[in-house]
Length: 174
Image 1 (cartoon, rainbow, N blue to C red):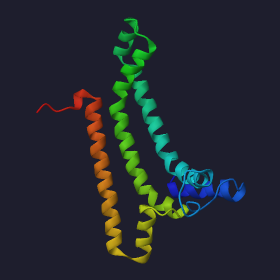
Image 2 (image 1 turned 120 degrees about the horizontal axis):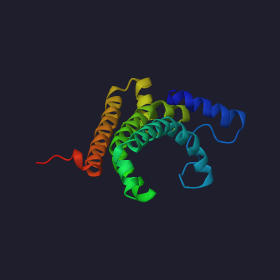
Image 3 (image 1 turned 180 degrees about the horizontal axis):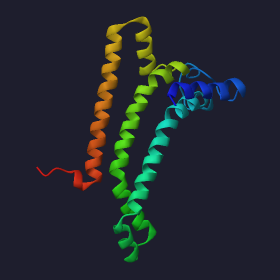
Image 4 (image 1 turned 60 degrees about the vertical axis):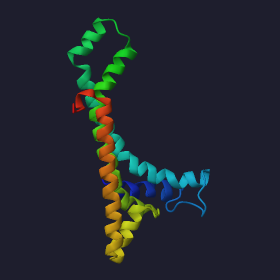
C-alpha cells in the first residue's frame, strides 16, 4: 500500500471519525517537545514507518530462521553455549543482510515523504518538492531532487561501511 493512501486512511480514522489527533500541520508556531506538538507528529511518523518496519521485520525474521537452521547453530548448542551467546552469533550473521534492507527502506521513506508531507501539510523537503512541481519551479525542483539524491547516496555509503564493519567477510584486503 502506498504511503499517501495510508496517510489518508489514518487521517480519516484518527482525525475525522474519532477526533483523537490533529489532521494537518506541525502545531503552534514555535516548535517544542510538548504534548500538542507530539500529537501533530504521531500520524506522519506512523505513516512513514509502518511500511518499512513491516518489510524489515519480515526480512529479519526470514534471515533469523535461515541462520537458525544452519549446522553451526547445532554445533554451538552441542558445545553448551548459552542462549544469549548463540543469539549473538545469530545476530552477527543476520546483521549485514538486514542492514542492506534497512538502508533501502530509509531511501524508500525519503521518496515517500513527498506525498506524506503533502497530505499532512508538513514543511519539509517533500512538501517543497511537491510545491515546486505544482508551481513549475524547475530550479527548485532540481535542487530538492539533488539534495534527496545526495542523501540517498550518502545513506547507501554509510550502510556499506557499517556492513563491512559488521561482517569481516565483506572487507577488502588491500
